[in-house]
Length: 278
Image 1 (cartoon, rainbow, N blue to C red):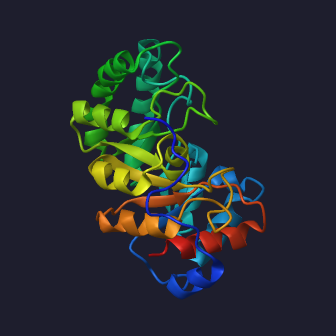
Image 2 (spheres, rainbow, N blue to C red):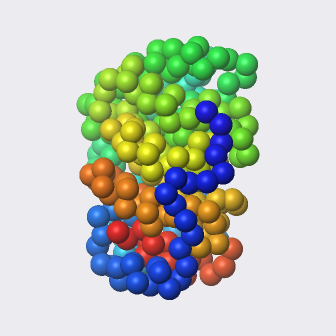
């Protein structure tokens, strides 16, 4: 599957149309929304939590262990904590399994004790490996960890990333590959993190892909295409319609904003909340 320039059924939405269709901030739409910490690195975590909660967000994404209780103290969920390992060195390489397993087994009880429901994982880069071999290796490694995740009531969530522009050589770069991994693991405690920004670059066909693979998706990320900036009418994805499609699947997890604001960061986050508050 190649990258597609357009989004099926999606067009740009101007400010006037947004004003007519978006519920007021704090109106409590069908999707729980979160924000990725790293995109707001110039703010303290305390300030980000205060601002996010005032807007109507329910969680914070991609927090390290020392940050978890800060978000919880503000009445927010740690919607997606950072897990063991990095993007390039993941579960597709058996040489990484021992260390990833060890670190995961240290994290899972801590996550469970705080009621944190997810932990991010990565496939790793190909480095000449075929998709079939990488799939087998991921199954071999993660199948050892899944029972512990089930016991801890924590879902392992593998992120889909584009290998075209941002993460060259990353293996889990198509939804079908990630879903095949989920089928082979056969556990409700393994899901995909469907990043709309990344998958628009790799696949396009966002809405029908979400409909087809929704049982395998446990978390969503946003970001404007191109550039990973604001998700308003300055970029190519109709996030309003995408979020309606997500809600129509009955999704009850988090949709997190993972874009780097060009303008006022809080205004951008508030606007994103309103666009996605369907």
